Image 1: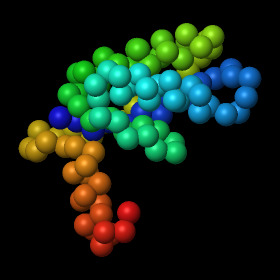
Image 2: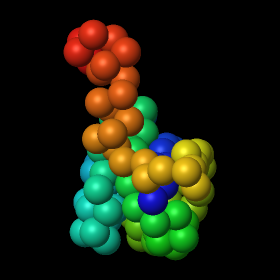
Image 3: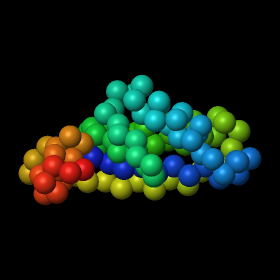
Image 4: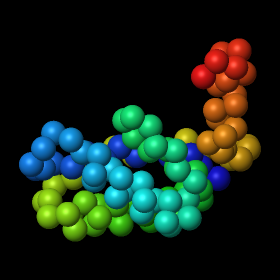
Length: 102
């Protein structure tokens, strides 16, 4: 299992606010069955790497369906072959190192 992050930047909107576009993207990710954790600057996704990669074109298409002609996406991947990664496990590891103060 992999943990990925995706930041979606819709280009050519009529407003500097992107939250309506991001809400559509997060809904799509969750409806696709992935565990997702939205953050102020991106969304973390947990799942099989190939399945996560297959949702990227759907995210692009969701932005295009809103009448936009351009989207920039940053995707970063954390994948290990020695253990299973989960969003919860990564947060617990961080909390332990910070003394439970995340």
